[in-house]
Image (cartoon, rainbow, N blue to C red; front, side, top):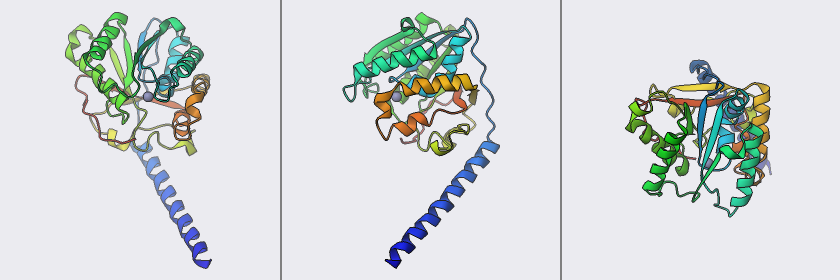
Amino acid sequence: MLWLNRLILVSLIITVILSVRYLSRLRSQQRNYPIPEAAAPQAGDRILVFSPHPDDESIAVGGYIYNACQNGAIVRIILVTDGNKQGLKEKRYAEFHQAAALLGISSGQLVFWDYRDGKVKSSDNKLFKQVEMGIDKFDPMVILYPHPSDSHTDHSALGCIVEKILSSQPESRPNILAYRYLIHHWFFPQPGIIVKDKIVIPPERLMGINHEWQQYILASEAKHSKKSAIYKYRSQLKNPFLAPLLLGFIRPNELLEKWSSGTSNLPDQGTF
Ligand SMILES: [Zn+2]
């Protein structure tokens, strides 16, 4: 059994070396990639959040939403799909209501579009028109929506639709502040869940000059409310693969990438 002990020892040494290198690389990235702060939402702001599935709103921007409501902004969330991949639609909708209430949003500001979970990419022109009407009807000052480089196709497809609409007639919506949020991406969020008191930084692939990341810093009350909202998604937290992802977003900051018509909207090839 000597060979087995040696194998375990070598594996442990390799793991420690790789972990140390990974953490020191992240530290250097954090030092070399300062992220400016996003402006806080104000009273009277009209904020529109597109959420592909029940939970994305809380995972990505739960703290921002909470502060927006506390500050007197008007926040509407459009839930695009039914989240019914595992036949849990009713349960997930109930969790969505509970999470949104914890963030300060009344049921009247929740909109359900009921597209099939996993099928946003193959939706026809109906979704495009609906997103366009959803934006124009609410007349938002701020839009939060999934990043076109998100590796979940429902997220990336929805992000592309929003940006196509914003690009199409920029003069008719001149003052909209558009923020992308990222959830599914290779090695994201980073640093990983083991160091969750650390701020999140963007994936290296999305740090180029075409990307204008900002961070929204969460005070303890906002972070606590976001955490409570995420914990309402018990159906998702039961999944051992999803739980680390959801919990990995309970951080001191939320990342937002500011979009403008000059921002690249070509999806990155990151994988989940
Ligand atoms: Zn999602």
